[in-house]
Image (cartoon, rainbow over all chains, first blue to last red; front, side, top):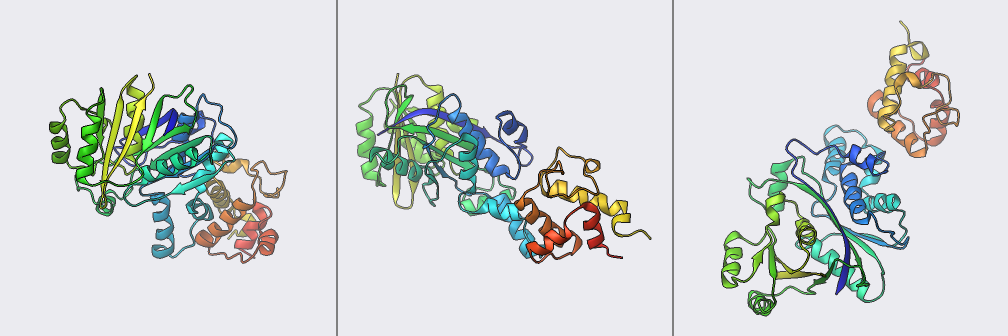
Length: 289
Length: 90
């Protein structure tokens, strides 16, 4: 169990290409030079979570992404394979494992642990689980944890790779949480389940949750509409967090689901349900009134 | 036919390339002097070693000029005039 002290939400549904974020970033006092869209997106979201908080220099940055910095990856591949030219050195450097984390740390003046986690099915849950483990074991005192996904410049190919319907609208987002073991001044409590559960265990869990008051459920996009409807019918006292209404698809949407719930509620408990090939993964957020 | 440092069009293209590749968008080509050493305190662009790498790759991609090492870079990429003479020698 860890505490959420701040949220940072940057969530957009681009209509014609990746939006230009340079003016917004400049207004935050960040240097645009040598950064690309993915990095700008990351810095803006992290900045919003950190804004108004005096972060200790040793604050860690734990970041994830479903697709990563694909625009620059495409540009490098295009330079090498199609144009038969050398890629730009800055593009190459920006693709190195954790360059984006460096930009965030540099902008916020942080020198703590800085990691970029990836996971095929549960990028958000695995990032928050790592943060939860490190905080509960006393390895970290403050963690800025976030998920970043940029609008895909080749949407049809991206939909195919992500295994989503051809009509799914793609969005982009950079959503961050400021986490610590301290309850004082916290907005909410976060708990990430440590393992996947099967349908039977999920039913038991939902039954147990139904004993609480003021339960809201958020379904990840991988939960089908019929599955979601079935769960909601079984437990009519549950409310549904319709975060999907304000966003389009990207792979780290779970961060947005949690953040938007915290931003919109003064009390209550959110149960976020996601699924992968090994079963369901749950996260709960309980607002501290 | 004017070539090298006498070719104003070439020098303008070089300046535009440097500004673009080094993301020095707050500079206009006219603000980059022809005869000031680019990688020096006298040059307002404030370029660094990563900019040198960007310029070297851009020269290869856009002008088919290969600069194999840092020694060669330091010899040829001094001022705009020198760079233009290197690209289009007499």
